[in-house]
Image: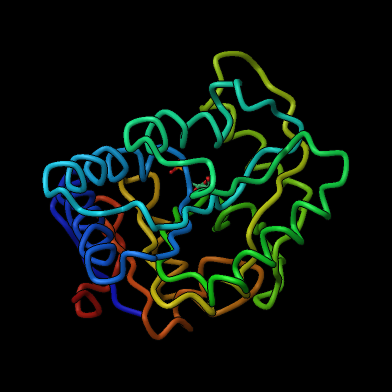
Length: 246
Ligand code: F6R
């Protein structure tokens, strides 16, 4: 794992978007798995801009949505699906065959997990995974206590996730479960970018990067990834031991 500190969220997002665009140029059939949320929002916009302006052929990529709130319809503006539709699929005009998102309304959620796992296996694993970090150290909906070998699964949401998650919704929304790609897939991914910005993330970044590697704090898994990059801005890195920064 490497930790790279940028001046601000914009510089961090420019770096992440360029890294993904370059990876698509080098491997047009890239499999990309991404989180939604506040942190990667600008990266998504810049990725669309880069791919379009540089006329990169992205017609063969496969896009996987990292997670979804169980029970939310795709038209709910706080859903991950809504985010990806507006930020990636519509601007890039991706074909429906190029992306897979968990159907959070499916009667058989386990079947959704199996579909995701089968697709990841069919693609030979995830090439790049771009994730955020929750205020409890979660990655996707891999909540504290999730096994580092987990595959796609349905998770009961932690209280912190339920509370912090309200920021995505215009009205109070009952959040109980999430469906998510597992941490085993993250460990097996060729490259992982974990992004964090702002002073509110300083504590969880310190725990992820300098704390013990433990399933109690899922993001500490990054320390075990040989091609993992923690991309932070100065505020998110403000509590770190500066000698450990790249
Ligand atoms: C969302 C996801 C979550 C977020 C995390 C940070 O798809 O996977 O784990 O990455 O909760 O969210 P933000 O970026 O909104 O602070």
